[in-house]
Image (cartoon, rainbow, N blue to C red; front, side):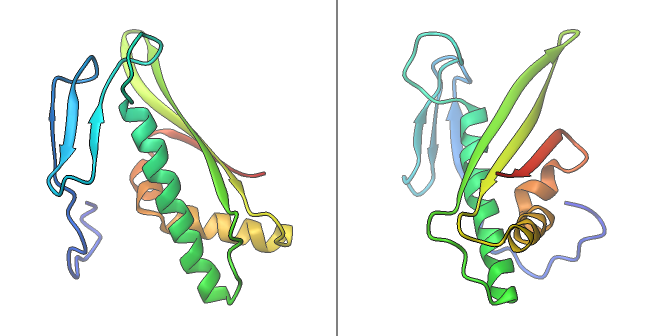
Length: 142
């Protein structure tokens, strides 16, 4: 957390227990709502991977952030609002890093209004804030 941020209260704490890592590991949330098996991308296996989980969580959070912005603007967020998120696991000179693209669809909205919602979502979404300045991110209205 940034030292410039004043904490009013913690709204929620996700608690998860993971064992085994990417190759055959598992994770389970403390409330039992999430149980995930992991497998390495591109290799045989039936599990998910951290990049897929990040893409899913970020997309859901981003849509929520746009919904808050839409309510403030007195605009109805389209029921079929969608984000196609792509999170890349990269390697350069033996160092691993992430980069991401969020392709946002707001069908039926005026393009200028839609872009305003996308920009507001990217500014307020906690995932976007966490990634800003840490990984390359492209957010695009499609």
